[in-house]
Length: 607
Ligand code: ADP
Ligand code: MG
Image (tube, rainbow, N blue to C red; front, side, top):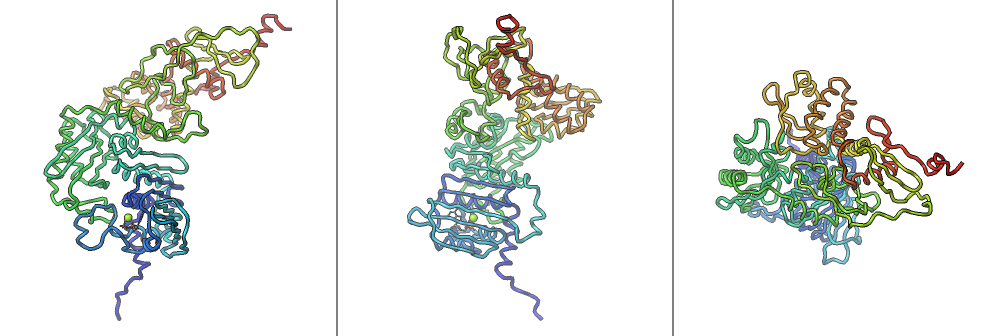
């Protein structure tokens, strides 16, 4: 009896799906790559529930004709490859015609698409590989794919998925890689209603690096470029001072496609010999361009690995680009980049007075205001801007807050002011270099400036969620904590790194501090760590997190006895008066108030 059975196309699709669609992030990658192949200039990705319940990719690319809209879900249906000759020089992201067949075999997909030249678009819905519905539909030029309930008909695969959070992060990572590869295309990524990133699509690699990897990483990069026998390399490599604990920040693109390659990793890392410590890895974003015929992308199901016809040529080109970036006159990315990028992105960023602004990654990484007072403060004080009396953060180039036009102090009011909730806060001054005296309506406030600021920083840190932003120290600091403290630090290594500290042992007794939380003044690094060690020796882990944040906030906050910029005082007073800040992180009140009535009574003006 014959034992060989030819699998039905549906089963074959399900098997192929296993190779192409491993996780929700694979769907994200395939759909965005299709949008790029369709010539889109703007792509929006939305995901919900880690991607397994909902992934939508909208593009303004070429769209599909009605027939193609139905056929695109068939196995080996592709517009990108016609015969085997085409395989020798692939210039598109896709070519096998597998992705949509694979995705639609294991999910519910809806497609809405229209070409510019067609009056009407097409709607198609597919579930488990079967077309459910197909009809003409009105829609803008371009294509929208919505993928729901991934793996709903393959429960075994569903079981292998990680938490929604982990899958969601992976989806964003995949999108980020694809977006980083194509700085000429604008990509917006929204997860559970929150914008994760947005690239301007202005064709500048520095803008893409800035928007996707954040300001700190961008500023620690050196431009790299080189050419070797038809292989061109450009992009950025991290400065040796900004070595990282893993290779997560190494990105390689070959003809715009994100790839993994141990050989290219080695090409970069060898350039850092003796400048990076063992166990540290350079960051890099490198774009390799070579003739499509010199690279074979058809060696891996997800095409994330490639073969070069001459590995050595590519290796050398990448290696020399990195070496010359490190040796050469290469200037680090400067604030210019930050400014221009910021300007470009500015229209996309929510205006401060908009309702419920979307928190963007750009926002998080935007330059810190000079006074360390939190990005959410609007300077409204009608006073001339004096020079900051507090030293700003060391290595981070600082954008000064916009100077308000000079204006005379308001004339004293004769009639008692009507009491209104929304009246402006006026800071009358500061007493004992500790308390802010402010008034609003008929109420006088005495505010403990350190306690209030500490609360503000603490809230801001907490709002950043699990991973606190960190800043790399220009000059890493060495520190000998003592054996007990060392043990406490070792046990809490993971926690400290989540909170933005990057510590590394140096010999058996010393530590090198490479990065600290963004809010912390680098000068306070060691005092903060000493206090944290004391706390770690006592508290339980969960308590430890808040208590470490408290220490960071306390050390980051302005202190009683310091001269403080009047605008910072006003910003604080406004937060306190509006009720946003009531207690310091230790539970002490931050303000006391007196009403006009209470004062009048004290002075015997009223009975
Ligand atoms: P491949 O990308 O390998 O060709 P896919 O299964 O990913 O295979 O896509 C099948 C075909 O569907 C593509 O070749 C293309 O013609 C069409 N297609 C897919 N996505 C889009 C899109 N966003 N815009 C226009 N056409 C698309
Ligand atoms: Mg494709």
